[in-house]
Image (cartoon, rainbow, N blue to C red):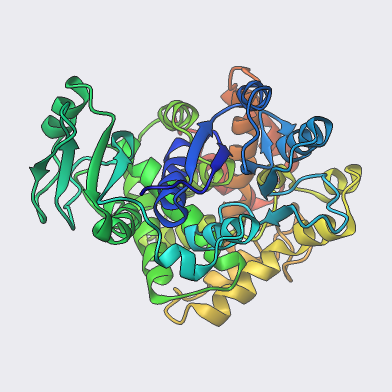
Length: 447
């Protein structure tokens, strides 16, 4: 008998990560997962249904979803438990029905906390009765996946028919025919379900190292890999797999930067695929930094690699994506941040430098110093945008970061990016020969 453990409402606008989390929850906990992409859709659903658990991003569409959903649950007197991913203004006050997790948690951590709230023990998870065949939504399956187990389709008479054998590659033609025939799911033997899900998770990291990907897919898989690394880094949970994912992603970033000649191409791609704000900033800063190095008489490929490391890790210890736009003491002090958030922003450069020094033994020489100085402060605490007493590569990052923040802000508000105005602002804000040489290097960068 296949008895489900209740319903989970999952609210997230990042489809790829949402689908992977959903699959893991269904496989390991045997829950029915209802996916939503907007807060209003979640409200509409909760008007009629009371799920056992809600998992939500803390902030979507500039709204505090954790706070809004929790208030609605209290008004309706539901016994629904809630997991909030990211920062929220919700005061837990010892309420055992609510759990806060850092943003972009690992699948393992999410499962652990969901099982705890749903009172599902590890022993129960191990002996779940899910029937002979386990369904997997077709939309979760990437093309070219090499199958670790056979997959089946469900016939109208209730029988199961094998579609592909183990070690076959999942081609687009097969997915098309399954969709065309009305199949919403493929099936694997229940004994193979855990192995199958694990292979999907590993596939993300492996795919970004592939030269077969389109530019758009390279960025999407890079975003997923970045989030996996970020989750591990913030919890100091480092393994050879995480180190490898870092190196693969940095090479991927440099490869993407070499394939794009105009900044607006980047902006169009990242604005239409659902990459995180921090990863967008990471990619754009890498692109502009690489361009500047190309224009410098003393620029080398090794320096591009160093700056790519800096772009990848510079904001990884920020707890809130929006904080990438804080670039000076005035802006930081103008916000009424909590003491913890203020300290996190003020020290994120130093924290990243310390982390790299401790965990990455093969770090390119000088990267730790550049990361520490990437906001102009020699010691990695606070901001000093007009300092020229830091590494030349740190100054390049400083200018690229300023450029990227201005462009991303303009793009987000629908304003046209005016290159002349931007260059004029940069020249007025940064004085000195080194700064002027760097600004000159980006004058011919096509927006």
